[in-house]
Image (cartoon, rainbow, N blue to C red):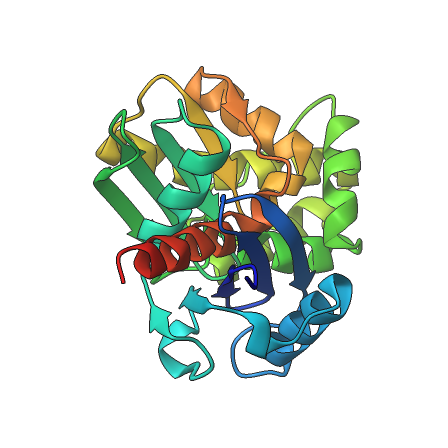
Amino acid sequence: MKEKLFMGIDIGSSSSKAVVIDEAGKLLGSTVVNMGTGTGGPKSVIDQLMEQLKITVQDITRSVVTGYGRMTYEGADTQITEISCHAMGVFKSLSDVQTIIDIGGQDAKVIRLDRNGKVVDFGMNEKCAAGTGRFLEVMARVVGCDIGDLSELAKRSQSPARISSVCTVFAESEVISQLSSNTKIEDVAKGVHMSVATRVVGMCNRVGVAEKVAMTGGVALNDDFVNTLSEELSVDIMVPNSPQTMGALGAAHYARNMAEKG
């Protein structure tokens, strides 16, 4: 009898993620492509995953799509919100987590779970780039480094710069002014992390933070930012092995659950 396979696809604003699990819920493979909704990212990420696993989309029993671009994607059986899918993905990976902080390219989310992994409350910032991955991208460009280098720069800071503007445009001008005043680039990088952390802490305070906290999304790969946020919240923050694919993993588990229920 042919093995049943389930796929989850997470189409974000700046990246696409896909995972496949088996009938037992075991992760068989995952891919991330740095192209999001409105691009060839969704097709590319699935093509790469199929090649990785040596299967075709016809071998997939059921699929679920989530994320920023889920409403415009027609290649999945069902679409489910990213709030639900992140909750499911993290619960399957770190079952004792009750607070999820997800920072994507265009939004930031704080999700609170009960002990059974059900969503009890959440908050989202999607109207302003401050507090998102986009903010970090803009600031990295201003200081003249790749976004992946921000973490190492910030770690060398001895006197973090204060960035008070809540608007990305004004914050950009503020950073340029700081650099013009000979503020060290590493102090500006640390200041950028602290500025984003402050925005996220505000969301956390509105939603409430339970004991066990996990961070997902591409920004979770920036370990200095994770440490900065941890200090601001005064809690330890866990990062899953693959923080970018938690939404896709949750979507795959929803696909599996739906198939089981017929």
